[in-house]
Length: 88
Image 1 (cartoon, rainbow, N blue to C red):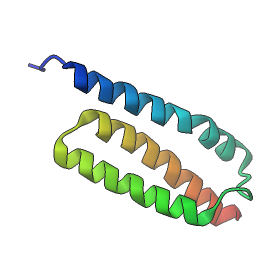
Image 2 (cartoon, helix red, strand yellow; image 1 turned 180 degrees about the horizontal axis):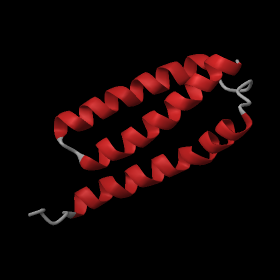
Image 3 (cartoon, rainbow, N blue to C red; image 1 turned 135 degrees about the vertical axis):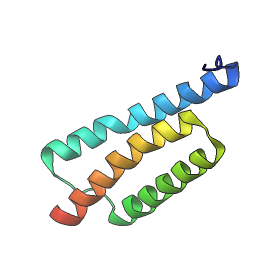
């Protein structure tokens, strides 16, 4: 049986959805065009590692908003990082 969400947990889901969705258009554009010239390699390395740590932290807290949003964001960020490494 699942427990009902409290107000604060809904806030987490909304925040997670908005920040993840904000990242999607850039990821889609980069994946489609494979144009990574204007993307900073250092920034994406640090960002992807940071998202990985947020995911670990979310798992340790059992926070589904953090877990779900960081799985999606990590996947998109890692894909862009891979494209940057491949296409420069």
